[in-house]
Length: 146
Length: 146
Length: 146
Length: 146
Image 1: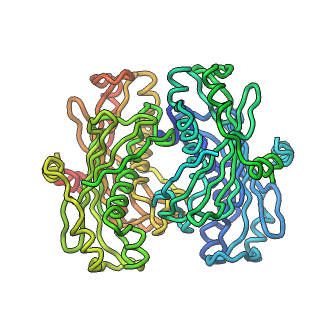
Image 2: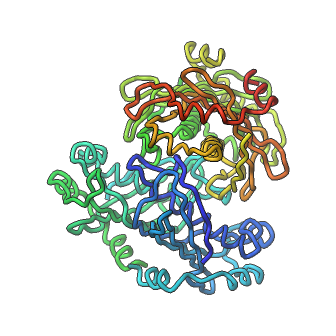
Image 3: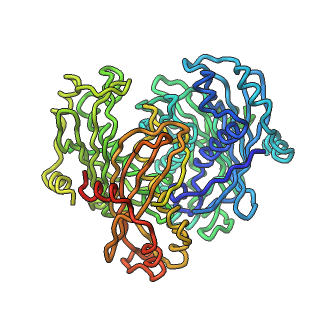
């Protein structure tokens, strides 16, 4: 899976002292953007060059251990599975000590700027085909939804 | 289900012109906080008077139709189910025209301020017992995870 | 000045237990949007009907006392002053006990969707002309920048 | 001044296609945190080891040119000036092409965890004394408040 490091900021942490749960979905966005960039083509290019948007159909996060202010965490991202009209990315957030902080996935469809469903461009399809898959452990846990 | 109206703000909307997907989890927080308040006891009181926190174990959102800037949406919230050591709240976001925007749930456990698992106080248990359930349609869709 | 009530949410509060400082600028946005709505024409209408955007040229906030989770605060908003090509709104956030939490202003110019400077439409000019001014105390404190 | 690179994310950008104005204050937080870290002592250490918090008394931002999605911007941070009981940090955000995006400052006081004013510890004072100042151009523009 693609790995990207992220620093937890003051703005991310709630009064309990842990990262506020909605921010993990922001971190998932960062993970998939950086995975695509590492493959050689950014999500920004997909939007501007191919005219294809990947809005989120579904998002799921399991919270195992809270991240704290100033932690340097790692976002692991891979493709969970692809269908004709959608793709699912899987994520694992890992803390400084190596502990799993959170797991999750997002499911996306393909739309034109005008909001019409569209097939992924050849370039986008090729990009997703070369993307790393999620590891077996994460894949299994995400698929059985447990 | 409890109903609470919310105005979409500029800060909530992404460059696609739709509410950014992570913000729906903030809206879920608002929904459950206002449901408890409507029952006569705020989440703030649960934290300060009972010393019990309800961190999120899992969150899930299905995105059906995007909300737009300045939309006045309705957050419907109810209890999806309760277990001995956890509770799940279900949510439906409804747009100005009555269209379903998103569905989701959050699962919470009970912790002391020190982070130790704890049974819900009698007052909290009573509060959750009087809470409205999710309607049958939402409950069915959330339980079968589809 | 226009008054609008806002509930502080978990997502707004930082690990110090006070509202994170950047969120006050979101609250200023809410204040000016609700002031315009109360005058009978929303900022959304200004964008869609007049095709005029009001991007922020400058923002300033003074933090007097922190707001806390679940506080119901009041956002007071008025016009600080207008120039040919810009307008400044002034803000005061007031806590549940009536204490001043923060003061600030934002300065805006007028742009077309394409980003070209434009004169405000007659309708927008009329809207701003009827807007309440800031009270003398706030105006004085903002103008002398102290 | 200390320089730190930051990638603009989808969550940061508003429907105008530019970074939402409040987020610049988050970027200022990142700038000062990374400046302190580069000096060898993190803000997290100041809080936990010295027991001193630096809440914001005032924040100001001038917006010169909007940042866009996926831009890699540079946050330049330095000490604008220090007083007995407060410190001001100055910031310049620079876009990919080298254009100035925004300028600003934040003023901070020193508090104990209990919220009592306190003198900065010797270690914190030493840290701020070694910090880079803002460059002359930024200093001049911030001081004359223009």
